[in-house]
Amino acid sequence: LEEQLRQSQKMEAVGQLTGGIAHDFNNLLTGIVGSLDLLQSRMAQGRLEKLDRYIGAATTSANRAAALTHRLLAFARRQPLDPKPVDANRLVLSMEDLLRRTMSESIQLNIVTSESLPLTICDPNQLESAILNLAINARDAMPGGGSLTIETSVSNLDRFCALSQQDVAPGLYVTISVSDSGTGMPADVLAQAFDPFFTTKPIGEGTGLGLSMVYGFAKQSEGHVRIYSEVGKGTSVKIYLPHHTGELEGEAPASGLSDAHRAEEGET
Ligand code: ADP
Image (cartoon, rainbow, N blue to C red):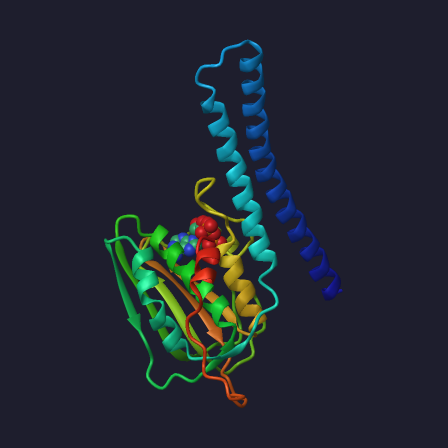
């Protein structure tokens, strides 16, 4: 019965998701077709001045539609992961410049690394994308400035998580927390925050994929993610990843990644 319930919830989620994308995509197509119609009738009437307005509008909508499918593809393609032993301290420190460039000047960036942090095992590219997504959310939650703190630690996770009601394997996790002093999230936003395509940002600015990507990454890495948020005070999103216990297989712990990847995934 439980399995059936889960399946039907999954189907509902897929339905919501595809419905949402179809809706957004359709709006963009309507914009393109509308602009082209106007362009055509102007040309038929021989009114050839200022036609670039319509071309510009159609191009803008087409580019948005392309960006939407691009993000969707990036989201769908996040598998397969390429898990390796990862030194989260090194990875976070290697992101310092990128993070500084991503923040506005009125945001103070603090990076706090835990001494003697054990290695974790995960896909370092995906971890970097996840941290960048969280940092961008933090920035967006602090339009008037504030502070962004990225901190590594080893921490315990209690078994019951009220938000997701997921069953958690107890034990120690390598934890990466991304905390801001921003707006915080009201209960109704918090309840939907991990849903794909849920966003409170204006159309064209938010995709609603950031937190669901982080969630998917944590799950696939056999870890967890939790949001701690208080309206008016700020938000802390914590990613809990398993310890690396096996042999290193002669590989150096990974940190950082190529600029190509940054350019591709940095937006979501
Ligand atoms: P997006 O950022 O594109 O909206 P996300 O899935 O990353 O998509 O986030 C979903 C929503 O959760 C955001 O629109 C915002 O309302 C809320 N949110 C996420 N991170 C934060 C944060 N650090 N502070 C306040 N609200 C946040």
